[in-house]
Length: 386
Ligand SMILES: Cc1cc2nc3c(=O)[nH]c(=O)nc-3n(C[C@H](O)[C@H](O)[C@H](O)COP(=O)(O)OP(=O)(O)OC[C@H]3O[C@@H](n4cnc5c(N)ncnc54)[C@H](O)[C@@H]3O)c2cc1C
Image (cartoon, rainbow, N blue to C red; front, side, top):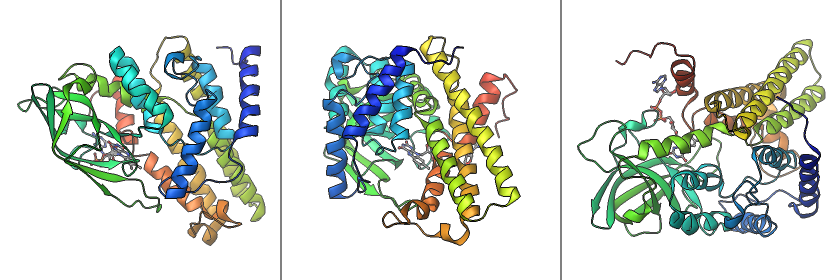
């Protein structure tokens, strides 16, 4: 694997850096869950879209530039390096939209993809239910098909972005007699439809955004089914692999977290033990970067060796280790969570820590990733079912 960036890739990186320097928000934006913050994020998203930088890897016909996996990696690295705002429509961009590209019809692609880039539609993921988290095959929300409509009843939970979302890609059970993976269908639901109720849920780090979503006789066109009715497990697997498997600049964010840790370690009077720990973490971050590059190489060469679970598990594990060390170094100061003021960065550490702990659970918990790596990739015996 050759890890030297080509002159074209270096030019792409420079152009991006110049554009981000000139057009990137000059200060921190308010929370997208506040009215002013939502408008600020929307303005940033529109600027990206108008300049063709909303999703460069998407095909040109739907508003992207059709760049390859390496250019996408460069984009994600620079986006993270410039510490630009978290994307408003990240679930549409990372997995919802690309799942439609992989399994949708031409009509579905032209209907939904442009709205993701303009943020006219904000997408969220409706997989988890109170009784179906790790075991998604236990999904109980029903989709009863009557002519051209599907009537959806049930409940989804832990819906990220749920309080601002307009559109959900969901797994529902269309065959009421079925059990497990069979009889599930992947469908796009307009959350503005009658019968949808969205209730906000608080999170440990204090950020709003999470929701539980209730469906009561919600009418959804059957034309919104992605793939075949009953083949939802297959379509959802694409979505989950996209969610877990693309590093999305996480190695760059880790490097930044490491730099912050080094700064705090120096400022608080470094002990020999904390410097040693910093060195260990730096080695882990370097190893993770190589895994992210290896995964990109697989995607770029179309070989598709599956790094998704390794990327997801290692990425979240290392970030938690860096945050934990930072909490240790900061001591009591790290107990305070604040978004504003001169010490906001430092006082945001506890918030970052909680956010990172959530990442170990979402997109399939790290225990589930270990099962996948052991059983599917290493061919070890399956865990006994109780
Ligand atoms: C921050 C955050 C954002 C999220 N966003 C979304 C979202 O947008 N949309 C969505 O649909 N869901 C979302 N989720 C839900 C997430 O996917 C689930 O929480 C996750 O899949 C675990 O399911 P559960 O909470 O029901 O835990 P459970 O499945 O009940 O698991 C409980 C514990 O048991 C362990 N466990 C379970 N089964 C096994 C097994 N077979 N082997 C070993 N250990 C096992 C788990 O690892 C976990 O530690 C989000 C979660 C978080 C924390």
